[in-house]
Image 1 (cartoon, rainbow, N blue to C red):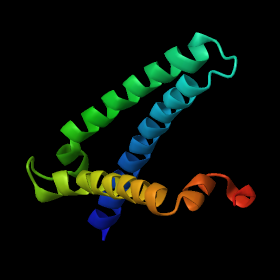
Image 2: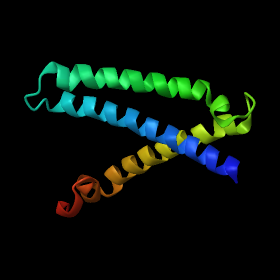
Image 3: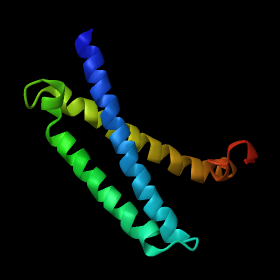
Length: 117
């Protein structure tokens, strides 16, 4: 039980780190499309530095995942748990591409909340 909760906590924390990377990259993309009068520091430099720092943390976490879990290097858990995030990301992108093609009105409403169509 302790191992389950420890591995789960470590893996969830790694997932949050991955979401932070995705968010910082999304900020860069958002401001590339619409600068909204922001200066270069706010729309390019700071988000790019954050993205690079977070990517370095993800890389370091992946390189040392076995140590984080307390398992021998090359153990199944050391690659399978972080790989689950990659599988979920690919499935999410595939669903988004399908949704945009098959149900464009629903796709246009994503992120609009109660104001959506």
